[in-house]
Length: 253
Ligand SMILES: [Fe+2]
Image (cartoon, rainbow, N blue to C red; front, side):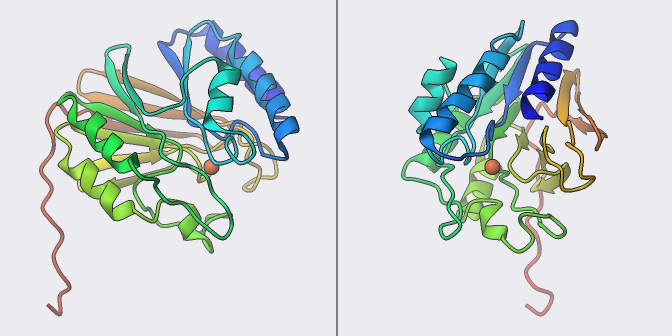
């Protein structure tokens, strides 16, 4: 049902007024190199019918049998770490290593953290930080896939990532996919949002049909998730990095 849902999304988007479409990755469920190449091409053709610019990150399923370069070639678009302005919003796309096996979990590769630090350090303006894997380390209690597999829901280096975000000169709102549910978690004053997927069925048995509409106006960011699991929230779009008091040590200490 994925392609018809994606086609409907493209039609609805083309009928609306948007600056861009952002794809957070996991465009396919991997099978083998030949089949994955075919499926990614089908998805790319569908995205190609968008009337607005589209920007992509790749997820673990996109690079299970293909490489990041394969994905970039199929879409003829970058899927690396980069910063760009969409509308008048500064966006940092972070594409660390997303390869995931049942035994390995998620680990950053050499240079991934430095790339994040460098991109965040470039600018003091408020920044939308986009990644496939959520960076908050939020609890997976009740998550169909990840309650028993929390090491597959975020990076082993989540503490270092948290420090990079806290030390960045720019206020940040982070948005990610991967965990197949809608959440908001605040870490050190930084809001982290995750988006349910278009095709996930684990809650109702029907595809969630989820996509999010993000709008920044003045000092507010509005996030509205459409589909069977709707969510609407408003966050401050801060112009200056918020101060966050370090949490206390244990009460025993
Ligand atoms: Fe994923």
